[in-house]
Amino acid sequence: MRPASAGAQPGRRVAVLGGGVAGLTAAHELAERGFQVTVYERRAIGGKARSIPVPGTGSGGRPDLPGEHGFRFFPGFYQHIPDTMRRIPFAGNPDGVWNNLLAVPEARFARRDGDDFRTLPLGPRARTEPTPEAFLETVGAAISTSLKLPAPEALWFANRLLVFNTSSDARRLGQWEGMAWHDFVGAHRRSHEFRALLSRALTSIMVAAKEDVASVRTIGTMGEQFLGNPFEVGNDGALDRVLNGPTNAAWIDPWTERLRALGVEFALGAEVRGLEVRDRRIAGARIVDAAGARTVEADYFVVALPAEIARTLWSPAVLELQPELASMDRLFVDWMTGIQFYLRTPSDISRGHTAYIDAPWSLTSISQNQHWSRKLPQYGDGTVRDCLSVDISDWNTPGVLYGKTAKECSPDEIAREVWAQMRQHLDDNGESLRDADLHSWFLDPGITWNAAQGRNTNADPLLINTAGSWEYRPESHGAIENLFLAGDYVRTNVDLATMEGANESARTAVNALLDVAGSNAARCRMFEMYRAVELEPLRQIDADRYATGQPNLFDRAV
Image (cartoon, rainbow, N blue to C red; front, side):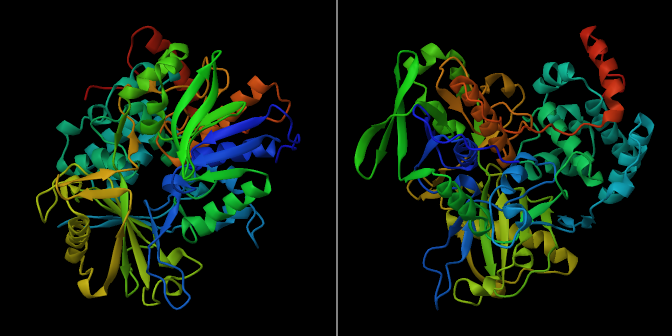
C-alpha cells in the first residue's frame, strides 16, 4: 500500500547524491511522503542496473542495440525490489513493472570436458518437513543427483548447510562472520568437483563473491534463501527471474517517469566532490557540472553513491563527527562486468542462465531474445537474432588464449577470450558457438583500456563481501543528524552487494530520515529474510551452546 502524500512542506528539501538503485529508491519513498527531492547523478540514471545503448548501431528507424553492465537477475527471495516495482506504473500491467518479471524454466551448468547438467525449478509440493534427518537426506540426495557428486561429499555439504541453518544469530555474527566459506566447507580436503561446484561456483558465479574471502555468514544466508525459495516459502516468486526486455525499457525509464510525476527533479552530469560541515550538520554538497562548481543546499542529504566513491567524501570534518565511517577504507571492491555478444542466429544454449563451471574467468550467460517481448531484430540493423549476455566474475585469473587476466587484456582480447572459454564448455557437447554467427560484441563502457600501461580501469567496481567486513560497514544513519547513507555497502539483512541490498538500505535511510524530521508518514515497509521456522528450536539450543563456548550441535570436524 502506498503511503499517503503529506504534501511538500518547508524544511523538507532532500538532496539524493547518486542515481542508482539506492538513490532512486530513496527518492521514490521520500517523494511519496511529500518531500522535495533532487537526485544528483554524474553519468546516467540507473547506475550499474541500467541498460546502455550501443552507440551508432541503430538504422532504418530502429533504436540502437541494447547493452548493459551485466544481465539482471531477480531471485524470488528479493522482496524489497519487487515491492518497489509494483508501485511503478506500466501500461497494461496490473502490478506495474513487477509484471515485466519472467520466471526462467531452467539453469544449465556447463562443464569443460565433462557432462553438463541442468536444474529445473521445484515447487511447494516438493517441500518436506525440515527435520535435521530429512534435511540431510533430501538436500544431500538432491545435490548428489543433480551435480553428480559422490554421496559422501553431497552429505558433507548438506551437513554444512544444516550447521548454518541451525546456527543462532549470535553464532552467525560472532563465529561465521569471521570465517571464509572455503574453510567452512573444507574445500581444500575435498575433490576437484566439490571445490568447483560447491565452493567456487556458489560464490563467484552465483552470488558474485569469492570463496576464500567471503564470510560463511554471507554465503550461508544466501544458501538459506536459495533453499527456501524453490518451495515458494518466504519469497516473492520463482527462484530465477529476468526482465522481459532491456532494463531501461522494462524498469528504469518507467521508474524515472514515475518519480518525475511525483515531483522528483534530476540533475544529470553532476559529480559530487565533497560535503561541507557546519554546526555538526551537512550544510551543503559541492558538485561540479557543466555550469562549473557550486554548492547544493538542502535540509537532508542522502549519500547513495558506491562505497569507493562515498568514502572519498569523508573529510576530517565529517570523520570528527562520525569516526566510524573511516572503517569504510577497509572495504574491498573488485570487478564483475558484462559483455554482450550479438548473434545472427538464435541461441539454444539454455532456457535460462548458464554457468561455465570450469571457465577461469567464472562466466555466466543468458540468451536474452527468448525472454524479451520486443525482439532483437527490431533493434540495430535488423539482422541481430539474439544477444548472449555474459557476466565476467573473475578478472584476476589468466585466461586460456593469452595467458593474461581480464584486467590485462584489451577489449578485443577480452571478447575473444570469453568467446573461447564458452566454446570450450559447449563444443564437447555437440554444440558450437560459430564465429560466422557473431554479428558484434559490446563491453561495458565502464571498462577503459590503457594501452601504454597494458591494463584496464573500471569505473564501476563491485563491493566484495569479505570475512569480518560487517565491522567496517556503516549503519544508514549516525551522529550527523541530516546525513543518511544508502547503498549496497550499508548494513542490511541481505548482506550482499545486490540491487536488493541497495533498495533495502535506502528504505532504512528513509525511515531514519522520517524519524529525524518528526514525520508522521508511514514508514517504508521492511521485509525479513527467510528462515525455516521448524528449525527455530534448534537455533535456540545453539544460542545457549554458543554462549557457553560449545560448537553447533551438528558441527563435526572438517
